[in-house]
Length: 299
Image (cartoon, rainbow, N blue to C red; front, side, top):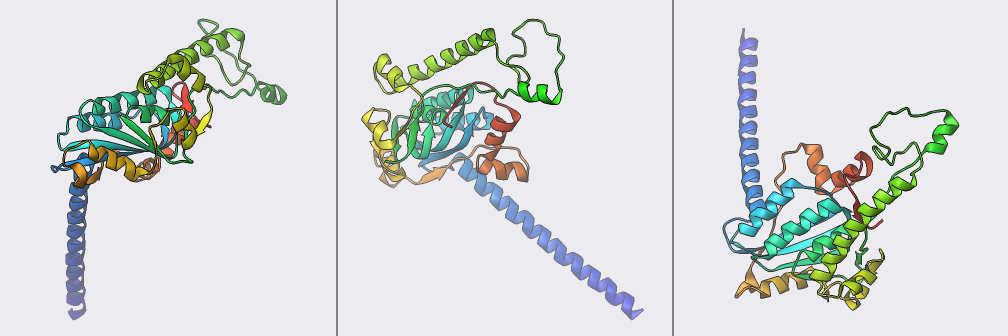
């Protein structure tokens, strides 16, 4: 009887301890959520906002919403865009460029290119008022690319074929089970030309250079920071602190403004959150699920 009573008391003690642990965990979670939201939207004190772009750039509605909020946030006195991206889809880069231009209408913005900010990454930089890059950063790569695998020789060797019925010859092409024909190539060439003309127009407009000059620079090559400065593709060779100091200098009395990191608010699981933290989800989406459009990317 005494043993049963002791077991009952032990179970009650264990239950109380578990309850305390659960309560503590919930309290910690609430603190983290509140802190995270504060960092995500910048809090209610004057500050310089900073966003980080890494990995492949694709359509990101959470990021667009964040930029829209940031543009209206009167406590955010400026924006730093930290870039480490080889680019991504043209449509995704276009949306990002538009969001950054909206922010730039109300506050000073600057981009800092660390390791690489090429193609779509450079489009993002063009969305800001001033571009900084390290001497040996990689940037430029102005141009558009479309790639599709083609395994027809392999399929023929192993005896695999594809039967299809389609409404028109151009429907579903190009495909991976037959070579690209001239009509398909002509359609894709037209799409590439349209997107490339838009890209060159953005460079010409934002860098205030003649269209012909911008077109000469748009041969797809990658430039180091030093070469980019020589060709007027960036404004200064320097580090992130130079970009921060420039933005602070645009605001009267802004020398002491703190820098606050902004992050898109996402509803995602633990694995998705970990992948998005390093930009690997964008890489998987573009490379293995398939690009949702033409690519502006340095490879």
